[in-house]
Image 1 (cartoon, rainbow, N blue to C red):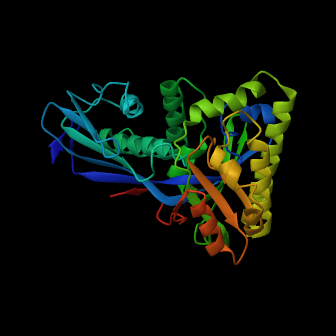
Image 2 (image 1 turned 90 degrees about the horizontal axis):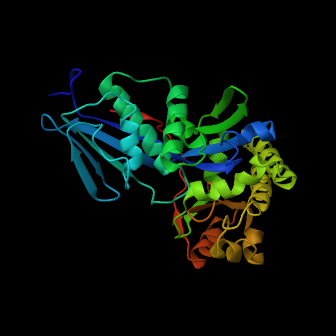
Length: 343
């Protein structure tokens, strides 16, 4: 055991899932959902995870290390880490909690940098849960998700959404509805019929291009905030596609789910320059590929990262071959069955 200024603690670990957005991404960003009305985001927690491990360190010092970046920094306590650089977001999050010394915090994402599946936000949630446990200042899930969103926005100096944090905290398949002053979440268990449908039809693949969501998101939503009528109509179309997707997912309807994903992407790729990529624009319109899938889209804000693909029944091997031929790397699509873990 080690003393952290508040008490003693044993080593522990917090692990949370990342998410694949099925439809309605970007609508989780304030104040966009207020401008659209009846906004909804649909996502699924997948078995690509983010981990924070906490253990005692030498007295009078704190250490923060990243397994992805291969860097580590040491300070007198957890408020002493620089808010700039590759671990700046995590440093800012630690300042949300009382300062602690005599502790080492190790962080790691399974997803590659710029994957578009909310890995950095999920890691932020895992760190905040770990810091709350360590300092005895843990909050409820909704408060943690809101605080994480605002910490991230302050760090990025840009608007950010909430779906990544909520998926990390809740897991499963989520339909998230946004209203003034409230967020309503309906969760389907990953082991149910909807989860079985996703496992049977969904593919996940990396384009090989890292994306940075804050830049892409801002290019998408600034027109809506300025009151551009065409942009607002497009976002209302995305909201309608998300509602259709949730209805189809809830009914375990693969055809309807694929159609909603396709409808969402058809609008999303027109929202701003850079949302799609050259590789995606070559693969998705290909006639042979279109016969094999009922829907496909870039995850998150787009601009690179992961693609999710919805295969027509009986075509998974051919879809996999087409994805590989396009130069994308297939990532096993597995729904997360464990949810948030603290051990």
